Amino acid sequence: MQLTRFIQELLYQHECVTIPQFGAFLTRPMRVRITSEGMFYPPRKEVNFNQLLVANDGVLAHYFAQKEGVSYEHALRQIEKEVSSWKKRLQTQTLRFPGVGELRLNAEKKIQFIPWGKVNFDLHTFGLVPFKRTLLEKEAVEPKLIPLMENPPKDDLMFTPEKEKSVSDKPWLRYAAIGAIGVALLSATYYFGDQYLTDQRLDAQVNAQQQIEKKVQEATFDLGSFSTVEVSIKADPKPEKGVLAQPMYSVIAGSFRSVENAEKKRAQLVSEGYEAALAEINPEGLYRVAYGRFKTKKEAISLLYFLKYTLEEEAWYLEEK
Image (cartoon, rainbow, N blue to C red; front, side, top):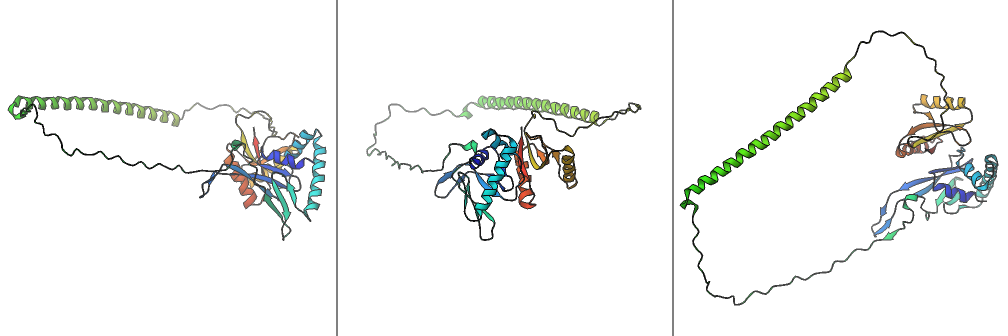
């Protein structure tokens, strides 16, 4: 059966691949690592296993049905059959997932996951492999010594330099220099003073414009009284399917076939303090209820890890496009 291969392929596209009634494989991004021996390890995504996430999110079954060309219900039955076989084999032997890792029971009869570690599931670093850097050795350059002349020439000069004339011999030069310095100082004072006044006028105009805009925004207007108009609006809680202006990153709490049950779950999460909302409907028409929907992946992953590892709640990650 190709179920293990489908799991490996989905880990390149999703950060969470749930196997119904068995567990979920999760990918966690790792940064660049450089060891003291000079080994360089590129960014990668490592795989973990969480046996608490057993709720079906439809990702694996939908992918199975698409690859095998069968219906969604038939794919679910095949997955359930394979999971039942895995649970029996896990009692006496090790389950191997090629390219992902191994599952076995420890002394306390709990599932222990050992990642394979040879496959990088980060598509952004595809083709990068670990390597060892080598230091460049600089060649030593010996300084060249220039020999001094042992017997410098003592030939007499063919001319005798004239004695420099002192400035004090010409007093009018001193007055001319003082006058030039004074003219330069006056010119500089005029230029920088004019520039300073110009900047001050511009700053004053900007401040005045800001004060006017602030007063206009804070002003209230008496428009008189208006007659009451009643408008009845029929709200449809069912989210419309379409292309989002930008991708949303959601932490899903569950999927429901009826919108009433989905609304009850959303109201329960809101009463518990979450900014719950209805997320994008899945391909099978199920209504997804999210703990929260975010514009950045970092916020969604932070909430997901808090729910799973701190509160031990069942949740999974969804990228809506």
